[in-house]
Length: 431
Image 1: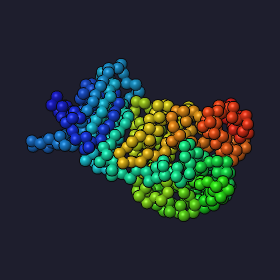
Image 2: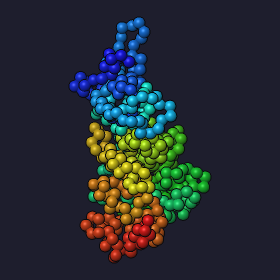
Image 3: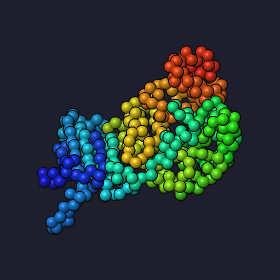
């Protein structure tokens, strides 16, 4: 690129109508001039060739992505070995880019093709790049449904206020037919869970068909509601081919499921957005496939980007990789995703963040302190269903832990007079 070519991909915020642009925060490592590399990054994801040969025209003023901010520091080499990278002086860069959303419109497939596609991950001289964040103007967000119920609606349905929402992943997650699977859910509701859920791996399969499972869990849920006097939710996993989502929604809800889970990235954001238009119950996201492009700090896509997009698509709840070594996700990244669920986002309602991974009654206080409020979901699996006193005891231990936290009593002290919580210490405290 000539200096004039490069300049055409730079702008100041004051010179743009920011309602016409989304903003993208990138970190990348490049070979050569960082200013030219950032210009290539803008060009490749938007205009590429910006005029016809022999014609006096320039499509960049309207259609080009533009660098708003750029910083660069030289380094001795790439942070991750890249076999096919060109050789030369390496710079570690941070850039904020304004991309005109009129290029693709409010469509998830086209948005992702532009900001996470060939133009970004194959930009000349940039073998390592990570999309760290994405921000949208209110006018763009207005085209997306967002959560139908959101946190407030979910709390109202459960009559659960001023505390976390307590989920439980029914275990064994694969292998049980519908009747014994439903009995485990029933026991966990009696013990105090708000939501008993299918595992993300449990699909509509012959040995536990979704229709049969939803009917059994729906009946168990209604019995638990009668016995406890409080609302409960059975969360059914309807992850499947996109052309089955509406069918499975209707069948699961008719049989007794009153919330539905979809594995977002395998199904696709566009499929979720379609289902949101039809849905009559809360929709809950699960995170399979996310780590494949978010785990490395120097490459891919930060998971909060996907969290924001899931909220836009219409999820009321986003289950995400949580705290601790099991999930291999930095604590700050988990908190970034939690904030992406809760912070203001134009007309889009907040959704409930559920940071999960190997939790039990002993980890509840740590999650609460890190999140900084009670607006989160807590989703143990074995912490409830491998409890020595069974699912009812496991669920009770979670509720007892929260009672201790809310009363300002050390959880270990509270356990002395509460056998279910004491058993949780005995079972899980040694790990």
